[in-house]
Image 1 (tube, chains in turn orange, green):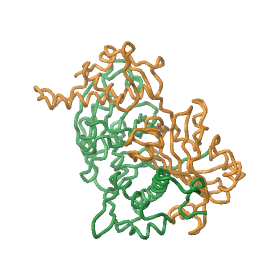
Image 2: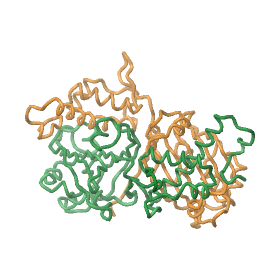
Image 3: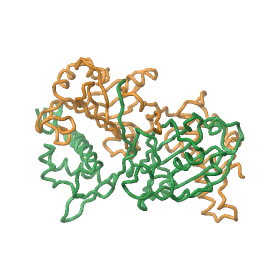
Image 4: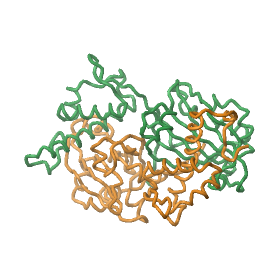
Length: 256
Length: 256
């Protein structure tokens, strides 16, 4: 039994390539645990434990620990500060998978969400969008495009299609400082009900990356969400690109 | 009202940079709708509609449609075939967010899941892992590392930590052809219960990318999942890297 979890096939004298693979495999294990600890704010001081402590806790070599820290640095989560150590530089905010919430509602305790409204207008949507909103072909919808920021940091780029009867009153509201969900409920005079969601990871195209102040190719958590009123009518179709280095989604699932 | 959804601020004669930004914005709208249609298999022939038809349906310029198709090509979803048109080249498989299922259970209708078991062994985990599995510090756990493939295509790289009492019998089972979930239930003599999940999008480090036969930096959908037995004991902690171009997660959320 190896503290470092050395796999059985490494029993012989490994060739250099094997050693590298082993170190990379071990570094990934270490990085995954540290990533979670960063995510859940377990390093309250904002500084990771010293290398020697990580070496001890993970039963890993100093080299492996360094490669693991490099992985987190490449993800933009930590930075090495001479004389200080490895510090957490990016905060990721948890977005719940449990309950349908707007971003400002979700992140209330983390600060203020402000929206840059890039585009609004009445458009004739493609057939796919009409069909998902259960509208006849050619029926106009309201289109809203926003960059959403928390305390000034861009979190997401949201493309939103709303049925005209609710969307037109929406355009008269303060879209810069309110979640669409909250406004929709006020306008509709009824709560929202269920939403169908699809989550993907995609690499940012250059233009989306620039809009989100993120590096080209950065991993985005992409959410497509069709939200219904409590009465079952689909009224709000969104395509949301979350910066992968800023947002996580979490929740609970059940086997039965 | 513009069929193309031209935003109000574009009313004047736009400078070249503005025109480019507009086209990029419009291309993203078109690409998001097409991505969904590809995902949900709406192009049954495997070929996207001709450019002229897309131009008509989206009320977009031919240039915008081409930029949109380029975006999907950059994501590895479609390819342009001379004389044929734009064809779907990658299939993304839906993984449910509703119910806790293993990969083979989830993808049963899509084909056979086979697992390459890269590493197994008894290890002394770091304190973070002990604490999540509610084990005393220093108590060994079983570690399993697998690359999971559907019909030969790598879908995910899974790092799994299992409590020793269930993990040791697990190692005697056929891990290449079974979901850990199914085996755990058999060994434990009780069903699994609830799992806490966290989803993120991260760029693949070079070694993870190579292990998944994916390009360096590719967007991964990363799932951390702590699964409990029906009796509430946490027994299975996993760090799963799904290839973003192969897997989506979907489900339904409720406002209340």
